[in-house]
Length: 120
Image (cartoon, rainbow, N blue to C red; front, top):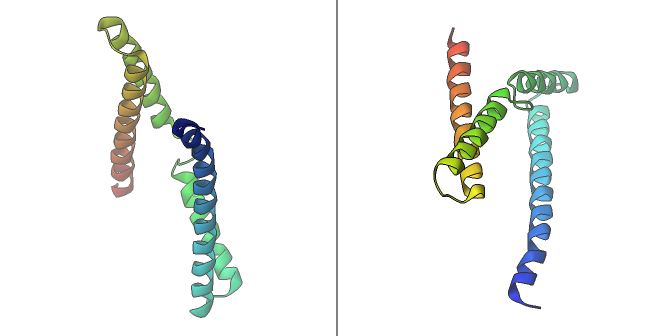
């Protein structure tokens, strides 16, 4: 087997290992937090209420469905398409670069808007 074939087989394995590692670290961190709260004298009901409040604040932050991100990516794809029509450039490069660039700009705008909203 040539080296490219071996590397192609390692990519899915590395992705699964990384996903498992992220889930494992997340679970162990939550367990450590809960144990530390128990050691400080929190009751299980208080711990549950803390985690419920945390999940509500994360749900309200818009992290799951982010309209700014999708709008920015859509605008980026349109600009990338226009770029491919105007100048001779690789289509994939233009689409991906513009989509990521405009999505990042949209996330920066959202962060600025959210910070402004929190300060008022």
